[in-house]
Length: 410
Image (tube, rainbow, N blue to C red; front, side, top):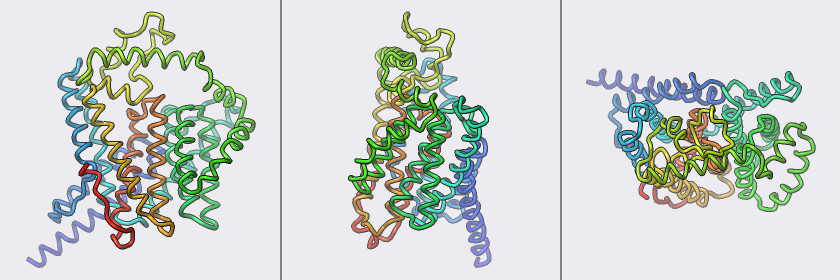
């Protein structure tokens, strides 16, 4: 019996090590390759489940946000069954299970030190990809929207935005000396690369998230923002300057296209209010709702509406949207409660929590103009980052103060 128990412990330890290695692989390739990134976290989840089975440690598992996340999965299932193209919706339904990555991180990243190590690896990889993207810009004489190793510049921009905000949190809350300089250089590299993607939604997300990081550290620093923005504008290449100026032009073709898409999307929601049209059905459905005088090219395949809220409502109905908003409301409540418990000396914890909040906010601000929730690479990294406040909760209660109500109990 003792020998059998020892073997089980050895297997559990091996599976635990495999899980941790795969998490590092996921972090490294989250900004490089979607194929390796997905394979890493799927295998990590499988190893985690196997270890829990071997140990029989079900009662030790933590599932914060399980109610809103579970409700959203159920609402997505209902939307799939009642959708206009159920077979197509079913093939897209599997994407909702990417949220399992959140529970993997919450349960397997046991310490602030390990979480910080993962974040520093992420920052290093993000910086390397930013430099690679800048080489693309130089080789094309600053005339191309850089995309790194991603399939499109918008995905690359979304990833740079998330990693950049985590790096900024490390600069202001955690690091000092040489490490602070290294993280600051990383921020400058990623900010420059983000500018060269010419992705305005990601710019806005980065600004919003940056204001959170800076404002929570010291509000007075926000006064420098009106000075920094003109400086960035004058230093930017002409193509980037024109892109910046277009943000204030409501008559710009991209603004007119989005407004037309949003009006069509609202009509879709009005006709399918409760459970939506189902995932993956937008391409076929949009053609029936396209405005006759729409500036959107009629030959263009419209798979999303360039807005997360409207897209979720159209695909999953108001029931799905309510569950989706519940997820982020519960996350916001918990992460803010966690931040308020932290004292200034909890530098590592504050960097993780503030970086997480800023990244999630940036994701949603960008999602007002792009369908960032449907971008597999971006939402996978968001699930990883939004788990960080729940990792901080695993610190001893005496270290952080009185425990707060778990967000999953909301």
